[in-house]
Image (cartoon, rainbow, N blue to C red):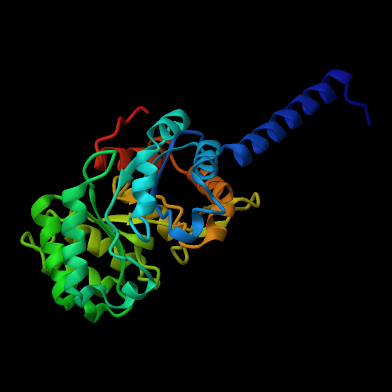
Length: 304
């Protein structure tokens, strides 16, 4: 058998190198644009181990250009807004929300506590160094029936009337109950669904709620079943979630949910994981989920 000429083997080597290079690019094609952290807490227990320069450094290294800040108590959010020189130097915009918790005891009773409603009104009147509060939350309802609580319904009506964003950690049944309490019956209510159903509401149920409530947004931290391992060993959206995000690219947001201090310690790793699966989406969709949806919601520049 005649031995192939050297040019043949050189050509084969070039093809192999090109294929290897393409594979490496496919594995490394993470999203590289700006991120909007739409679920960030700066709670009292985080402030000593993670002072403001520390948290801003983590955001800056992660490419986070804006945060939706809500803290227990609200002093943490106000502290971030008052550190304007530092946040501007880090290139991070702080969008403040009024949180409903003065302490941990409020988690289980806020929905029926009239002093919470009074506190929210006082905070809204007070504002922050960054301007007016842009919404209320995060709040939790561990039993969806508590969405019928008097204060829960008062706050939903207030948010709807004043065009305030609501950040709610609730199940899918509570979404319907909260929306029913608003003057618009949820047609114009700007509610960010923290974790888009941490209890595991089905993709079909999530799709139905997105259809029913045109201003509902899904925040994706901690969402069960969201990501799968790729053939290359990375992280991608699972097929049903990928299909949903492609169907509704304007309706999803990312968040860190720094509810405990270890979440600050892994902040950069969490943002890198988002970049990994965002890189598997069409670039236009990835940028919407990563940045543009949050930026448009709160009037920030689409090009930061």
